[in-house]
Amino acid sequence: MSEQAHAAHGDDHGGHHGSVFIQHHYDDAQHQFDSGKLGIWLFLAQEVLFFSALFVAYILYRHHHPEIYAYAHKYLDVKMGAINTAVLIFSSLTAAWAVRAAQLRQKKLLVACLAATIACACGFLVVKYFEYTHKVHEKILFGRYFDPCVSSGGTPLLTRSNECPGSKSSVIWDKTTGGASSGCFGDVALDVDAGAPHVQADCKVYEVQGTETTKDGKVEFTEKGRKEITARCFDPVFGPAGGVGGSSSNAQAYPCWKTNANPHVCKGGWFFTWHCSGPLCAKPFAGEGPYPTQAACKEQHAAKKGALGSQGDAVLTECATSGASGFLVEYGDHTVRKGDVRIASECKTPAPPVASTDPFADRVKPLALGQTTTTTAPPLTHADQKAAMYAGPPPEHTNMFFTIYFAMTGLHGVHVLVGVFVFIWLLIRATKGHFTPDYFGPVDFAALYWHIVDLIWIFLFPLLYLIH
Amino acid sequence: MATAHHDAHDDHDDHHGIAHTASVKVLLGTGGALMMLTLVTVLATRVDFGTNINLAVAMLIAVIKATLVVLFFMHLKYDKVFHSVIFLSAILAAALFVGFTLMDSGQYQETNIWDTDNPPIAPVGPRPTSG
Image: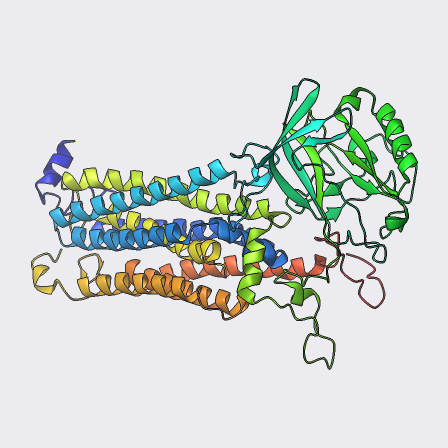
């Protein structure tokens, strides 16, 4: 400590070792500085390789799933990202200036620059804190925790957790009649387009989620939200294999619909289905066998309920009739889902086919040789298509974007946090006057580290926030 | 160590004793350019050049920004060549890492069916014998 006290007074007592911090095993200040500098550059090279693994994950996934990046980046706030970019660039400037101040023995300026760098680093972390907490609140998270309440365009979505605020409607559900006694829920409708067996006419089928309360023998079902069901899972029960009990697995044995936003519906242990039969939609869906008649619907359900055994309670079934067609509506497994799941549909008279809102539709259907223009040009403008995409549910595997997002920004954030502590250490030493024109290595090396942190953010910002 | 003439050479790029000192002009110029380029890259996303060109523009600006940081803030322009060699080797290794992974990923596109509802059309020709 007495040595440091000397350094504070700028004592040159070590011959050509101007600073007391020049270690005896180095020839001189130059030797010590050069050794340290080589070390920090090797460390920075390692940092580049360290982060490159995450960049590879990013690039590979974006290469395979451009639609996810086009959709998911909309969840991120460009303003926040831009502010943080500016904050980091400014802190890089102050860090670089701190090195200059140390080299020129400008102690006050050095202290000011270091303090400004720390302030900027903390500012960056505060902005990051607000971004992260918003994502935690909205469940825009990584892996299976990705369960957002809204689409990236801001429209409400039905979630697996059923914990989003607000309920849309309330329906009184009468179990004895198997229909809604009040409210507009349960207006199941038919596939009226017999000519197009694969199309549910203009029907939209929804998975509706809510909570159920029993009152005077009647069940009140409060809808919390709905998600459109757009794709159908493989159906081993009613499918080509036929029969009930083809598989003992709950996930396998029951037909279901799946949603784009919830690709694991079929695997999650809960299920629902919507079947219709009769002359209006007797034709089979592609490769999935004929639909059962109304009588077969009830029969098969009873058999399935028996096969389910202990899980039988989880299955609530309504076989409704409407004209010549029957419906089998199954609700979800209450042990897996927190709330009740019901199926609703909204049907209109068949309308002419709506143009695809998929902005990447032109990618999967390249022009044929000699073809100069697409005959099925969508009537929507590009901006409309994008708006429609952002309003819809997330594409499958969107959670992977946020897995990569949190891994990259998280690791970067940890680097910023480390930088804060390093610069606080430098600030303390600077106030003690440790840094002199022949001993400013620590300031220089920390600044180099800080610049690499800035450098990585320079790439992260456009890659994550500025996807077009 | 040469400390006597420091103040006289404040605003010049010079080696003060043991390392290069960045001039105020260079520091402010670099910082200003980085801020400007940040603004440009944000504004560039509002113009629709097509997904790939927008990405290329954003990456080009990022590379320019990174180069400015490395050359001036990190003093690499005035530093020992060996430090540049170390840094560029790391960049090269990362580029190889990315390049080879992408090259390899191309081999799996037909067998990895990402969209099970719309599986890719089987390629014409004999089935590959391995891999």
